[in-house]
Image (cartoon, rainbow over all chains, first blue to last red; front, top):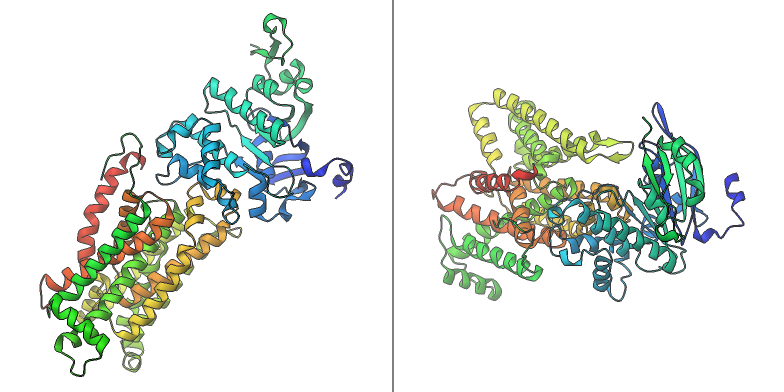
Length: 279
Length: 352
């Protein structure tokens, strides 16, 4: 429990914290002594090459996996001490891929996001579902069967479901969280930006904590406040995204050369890179 | 079956689907009351009902036939169809697979093996038992057999305290094969008469309906169905996958355990009394899903209603097609079920 003491002075209600977590599977360790803090009201990008342990870290945050050692705290409370139903009202997750059985329509799938609220429904449950679909621009598809949609459209439906799940504050239980594993993977360029702008807006205006696994470092630079860089199951960098993602760091972790691109018209904006693979 | 070209689903509203189910069940109930070796006209049926209310002193032959033979049989048919239909929906929802069937988890094959053992070995090893316990021996043994085999399949699918549904499917297939091999061995040992008994049992019949057995089965099925309806919303969430459902706060492990238990109890009780009635569990949920969509709040009760109506319809055909003899019920449900199943396979061809 020593890891707790270091953070006692921080506002714990707005913190999601992984403290010295290791994840072992027979013959291999997926994560080693990973410590990372996620702050509500910010977008934190989880970055790293394939197999670095990003999804494993996400599964610790969602509670789908228990660390072999170390702890995960949400709002200062160990994650396993939450009742699953309570947790479901505090955080919503979008997995890399979700296969939906049977011909459920888009609207029905988004409605499933309201499952944790079935005992204490809001005043306008149908309105929440509609607004969540509008937020990710899938409301025109609401009567289509999910399984007939394209990959990108499905991804937007699942994000709408996650938004519906944490649409409102539930009492005084602290901040709400969106945990997104590669949310932009199947999306076209426009929707990649649209989706990240949307979750950013949720973070800044509603104080929602967003943790997103991203592969596109330029998107991370543009939309995330902070980042955690993983390599070989260990944290090799964390902090403000612009400070962490230096050309040196990128070359070391991803093995590509990063050239900063001049901003158009010299406006100050987020740093962006052109990437080059050394031959 | 409409091709889903645009993925737009025009569905019947829930009230209409359930209303149609109730109507269908009522129609097949009335038709089933009237038809049979002893035909009872609707007018006579009405008189019987009046008699029942008025308590007439002189019961007519129609009254005796209806009250002692036909009504218990119809109620057993309703319980059997409802149990099979709803358990089919539960199993398909649990396995997230529209091709699953309650038999998959060993309920039917366990009952069949135990019934075969009772028929063949019972008279050999315990010559006194069949006479002392009467027809109850077979029913009780079949029920115990279905529970034991289902439990075995369930235990085999446990891994680190979690029920692996995929493992359960494979274990079910394997154990079913083993049970049918055991039954094959029993038929090898059986005398000609025993062989006939086994064969008839395997094809299913509502002919064994007696009031005491019917009351027991109906109450068990009703209890299982009441509990099963509460699983509708969790099963909807499980359509997203067990992992996603758990993240929504669904107690996935408890839902799985309950669905298996309820299926074993309801289908076990029914199968023990009627023998094996195939395809209802597969067909009924599909019909409901095709018209009403996959929401389990409609699919579960809808499959129960449709299953009951189908069994009653098949049973009135079984009683009248070659009267005064009876065709085995399983023959008729399969005659209806197999073509439907093949259509289904063609419909889902792209997704197999």
